[in-house]
Image (cartoon, rainbow, N blue to C red; front, side):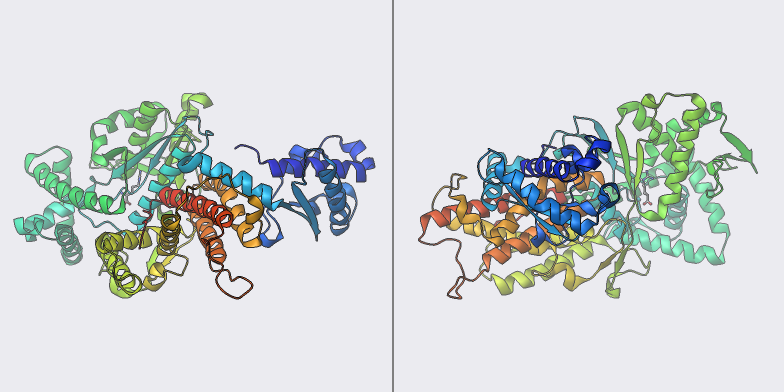
Length: 604
Ligand code: ARG
């Protein structure tokens, strides 16, 4: 991350202030702690209330060291820092410092902040916010991973959108990213599907609305199996045949698989989701024996009641089952095998699994097996996958509107959700902009945008409560609100007759509304890094909402006569300055929406 010149100046002046005010303490500490400008720089925070300044140093943490009360430290240091800042020979004061309780709050000079930010945004254009920290290190991101012959659930939607966004975020930071979709196309449930299809299904089942029909079969199987337990035996038998590659079972399985793939593909197209590698559990079938042998060689396995297990030696976690007594393999067997394969092929810097928190113990087990194995193999850390694998978990998605959930409780037919969103979006556009020519396409974009944003605007550890009115509110904290703001910015740009340039009078952008917009624009590169650090696109979603809010406040500001203070007017200089701010905001919202996986309409 390129260092911020405002923070550098502040840190240098403030370190000097500490040295001169607390000379006796400096003698014992030397160029450490608050006496070091690097240390100060690293410890800068963002004030909770943005009107307090752009960044802040929490001096209360150093009261012990300085043997002084925090408010008194801040009150003494602030004027001293300001003195150093104004006596530096670099021209105008670039930051001003203010004491507030145990904090030193800092505010960049509004004009200088405006010019450095707008020049940076307009010069980099679409690349603004990108960096080279990733140095082309390889990062595997597995997301979506729905199960064949079952509908695409809301949990899969959340995984899909988080992963799709993280792939773009890590790419922007110059990582060599690989998006993986790991389809669940193997396991005993396919034995159940085969039995159910043979009993109650027909070619018609596979035709219209087929994934729904498959779900119906699955539900019927479970209802019937409650009364008739021989059905479960039949299912085990069918799956065994499938594992042995029997023709009739394999053909049926392939049919079911193709139906699901076609359906998933359609959903990914609607959502604009991409993968670099679509793989599945069955891909690992012929690789499992070698993986099991490797674990056996490492001395990790034992036989318990005929089944092959790994006892992971953790009181919190059960042993991992690798092979059942009847020879059938399990989900975990395939995941371990898959991990070996991914490591062998890619020697990744990191490998992420974006899967709901319901599977958090499962991933702990998995990673523990790898750790134990590498320990026993004596692999050296630089050549080991342990520590490089991460379960990126997320909370539940709940539907407030009962009508949307099927009899399966949590399973929602995703296409219905998107269709409903698009339909509602269409109604709102008809009210607001009835003449819009691209209404069909735009309502799709807004509808999917609403659904996607709802998955990303909540911290990933938290649950989501999906509420229609909230999700589509053009004025709320929603995707449509951001898209609407973006369209408004585009419309201002269309109405501007000149060329947008950063060669403008920056004193015209020194107002407090403008400064707030500029602070947020300046924050965008750090926000992208925050999102990558915590594997959470939420940071970008939250920042965009603030930016759109700040821009709209500027846009709706009244002038002294109580009239709206128009962005474009007869005043050429003023219009040129303001349109540069408009263009910068449009670029950042556009890029931010892109990183989240939303489209940014020009008009709506
Ligand atoms: N197909 C699984 C499910 O729907 C998710 C797979 C997650 N990825 C993995 N490598 N286990 O529950």
